[in-house]
Image: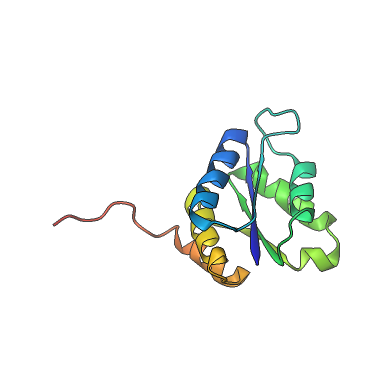
Length: 132
C-alpha cells in the first residue's frame, strides 16, 4: 500500500489537505506535517522524518507545498536508511490536487509509480470546463 506524507509550511493546510484525502480515499495512510515543531509557519525536518519512518505503507509519497519544504524533504531523504529511502519519493505535483489524485489511486491499490503519475497529471487538468 502507498502512504502519503503532506509537508506544508502551514499546519492548517497540511491537516486540511489530509482530511480531504482521507474523506475520499478511505483507508490510505495520510500523515500531515505542517509548520515547525513549535507550530509556527515553516517546515520541520524532524517531523518529516518521523512521519516517513512511522508509516506502515510499503511505499511513501511525500507532497510539498513550496520552496523550503522541498529542501527539508530532500534533506530528510538523505538521512533515511538506504532500505527506507528506496521506497520514498518526493512528488513534483500540485499539493492539494496531487495528494487527492494519489490518495484515490492508492486506495484502489495502485503502486507508487501510478499514484505519482496521477498526481503529476493533476497539474494539467483544468478546473473549469467550457460550457459551450
